Amino acid sequence: MALPPQNQWKTLDKDLGRIDRLEEATHFVARPLVAPGIALAFVALTGIGAAIFFGAQPGALVVIAAAVIGAYMALNIGANDVANNMGPAVGANALTLGGALLIAAVFETAGALIAGGDVVKTISAGIVAPGAFEHTATFIWAMMAALLAAALWLNLATWFGAPVSTTHSIVGGVVGAGIAAGGMDAVNWVAMGRIALSWVISPVLGGLIAALFLALIKARIMYAEDKIAAARRWVPVLIGIMAGAFAAYLALKGLSKVVKIDLASAVTIGFSVGVVAWGVMVPVIRRQSEAMENRKKSLKRLFAVPLVVSAALLSFAHGANDVANAVGPLAAIVHAVGEGDAGASVVAIPIWVMTIGAGGISFGLVLFGPKLIRIVGNEITKLNPMRAYCVALSAAVTVIVASWLGLPVSSTHIAVGAVFGVGFFREWHAERRARALGLVKGKVVPPEERRRRKLVRRSHLIAVAAAWVITVPASAALSALVFAVLRVIA
Image (spheres, rainbow, N blue to C red):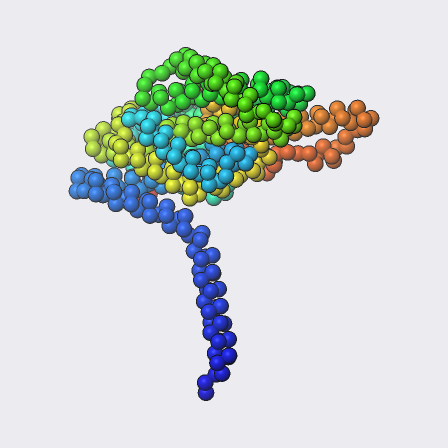
């Protein structure tokens, strides 16, 4: 029996509604799979490209497998490490998340391809005794195990939302493979002691320098009677310091891959660039500050553009420096397969290998980076352009200071330590002002009120510190396990 026309339309509407809901549910379920799908496609294309490039050459399968693992490692570096450069700018609302991803992808890729260098030291040099990898096959499996273990650890850390050092991850991987291949005596424990020292030095130095710059900005600009006049005097100086620090930083971390530059030359370059930048910015800041109101909110606009520039420069330097963590072991494997030489202390990086590193870092950042960017920029402590500027400036200055003192440092630990340093300085400063106001007004600030003013999330402090401490042993244990499995399979 046929339904009346109106009932037919009702039935059709219900069916269409079910289809719409089904499509919405399908999109909702599929959305979390888009990023892993694109990442998997990138890794697969890398393997296909390596297969086409090497064809039927001896050891082609080993190189293809290493290229796939190298692409996976580069994705994880982009997902975890780049957040340290862009997080503060996003947290300060100087950049949107989309703008930060675009700028970081462009400058990371440029840094890797332009200043990443044609030759890198083999990642095992100085960490494991040369005799530990007496056979070429042993060296190849060890490098592959180190690369895969470091990538797995970075993936896990990103999933938990912990910014960790990619350098420490790959170092841990090499240590684990070295111990599995040659025992405890194979590891240079003096070198490992210096790396462990950087766990403390990097964040403390970064935090102190960031706090000092924030103290300067508060004392000389934010609490000045005439804030605009103070800004005209001090903001060009701060921008000059930033330009000089980044010029020296890039000379040490980027240009030194292309041209030999010592610390004195880098500092000279930095000082010259800083003076020029100060001279250029004096009239610019004067024009920009005209008609501004004499209040703190006006000052944020003066720091927004320099903050964006500093984030871009940090990304360039990071791409130039840390791309080696992804492509260094891969280049060593390619060299060992092609030349049969596992003992070379430096190896040439083919352009296709460098492209894998640059592309992987950019894809990893865009697909998986937002999680860590939000944590570093928003969840540790509240940032504004002035505070974020101090974080970026601290990252560059700390590297220069550490190089001058000969101290081992981690760029990841410096940046995150600077965020914590800014937050703890804000706590101390707020407590100090509260006490002063209480004394003036004849009131005492109660302990519960002081506890309420905690401006740094302690849960993140504990989680990040724990992740830093266990990075090397965790990646080492993973590497030893992977090495043992590879030896059995091989």
